[in-house]
Image (cartoon, rainbow, N blue to C red; front, top):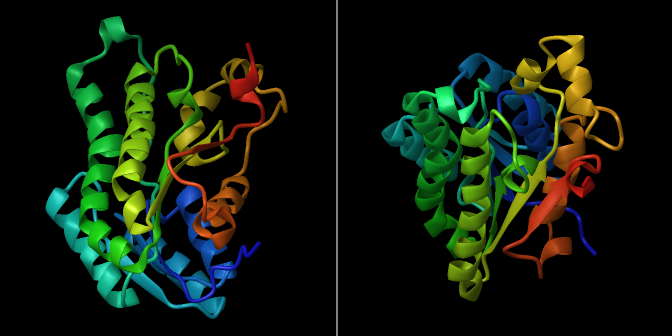
Length: 252
């Protein structure tokens, strides 16, 4: 089995911090050139510097995932800078609030779906011709909440569950062309995007009480599985969901 990404060209959205940053650096460590996309140019430049220190090429793509035109332009810029594309990692997403359905505003619901689902479809459409040309792969970063109910996070869970379904459908549509499409489902990971789950010791304890390993995961613990999914070690794997959650989804 070959876990190397030597000579591969990868674009990672949401790459300025957290899981996206860890994936971008892990891909560079495995030999890939990497285009990094996010809104914050300063943070992206820092990630690009780290990639270059690893001896790999880095392309900075500044774009807001909620801006369709900017997103498409960013994808095109990344592909041009890399000279093609072997792997697209759709990582941009997140959730900034927790609220029951009864009191949720539809504007919050719609923004969550736009960020976590619509932007992934748009990025995929922009990158798909290059991915098909290289017979490459797409990794969609979903969440463990796609698999089970998440009280007060119905908006986020619905978007991430839809992303799993999108992954399966796209995998079936593109398998004939040698393209692989898989989803990566992290559990509770220690990033600033999960700060709202640590608003108090009680809230944090309640979150971790459902995790058999009794701790937060780290971004690096998600990056390793992403490297596997992009590598030839996973060459017969498509339409699948890889769960990395410390055992959370195995709980009754």
